[in-house]
Length: 222
Image 1 (cartoon, rainbow, N blue to C red):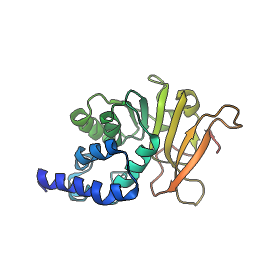
Image 2 (cartoon, helix red, strand yellow):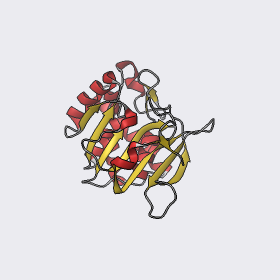
Image 3 (tube, one colour):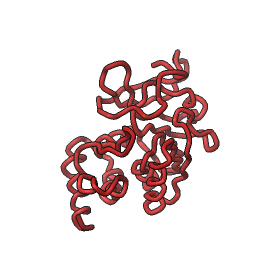
Image 4 (cartoon, rainbow, N blue to C red):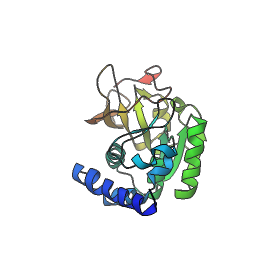
């Protein structure tokens, strides 16, 4: 497809997939109308970039379905000036989305091949994104605390690092899969007097693979 066809595909994605599915944040919709998702995947998948599906990257990783990304980002309620840690940033699409929304973004990725693609993409679309290579289960202490910790994929339990790296009034958003059930989108916040470190609210069911290193060991229970 040429540039005009990609532009048309992005507009169709927003108008036919996102707007009818209760994506009401006009700022997210406007960014997704212009952010070139096709540049976050290998060339043979470019023509499918705006299809209503997740697309394979490598080693079981995927670029999440556009609607899933939009729903999770909208649930995070991002505000300009907030500091966000994107865990499992892969090829950079969601990190760039947050940056174009005006957030201060740290992108954490454990796969160097995906991170290289993400760095190139963000250099063009969101040059302020700071990239870090390392294990996803450890977070990144150097730029903590974060107003938002966003898991760009599925986890089996909330990692311990969230307690020390999340700001006092911060929020955690992602997908959680326990047992054989379908993953569920969630948001989690601290709540004074609550018996566990975070109060979790489940939002909707979704499909996404588990992020690497995100097993239940050394993690909080819900």
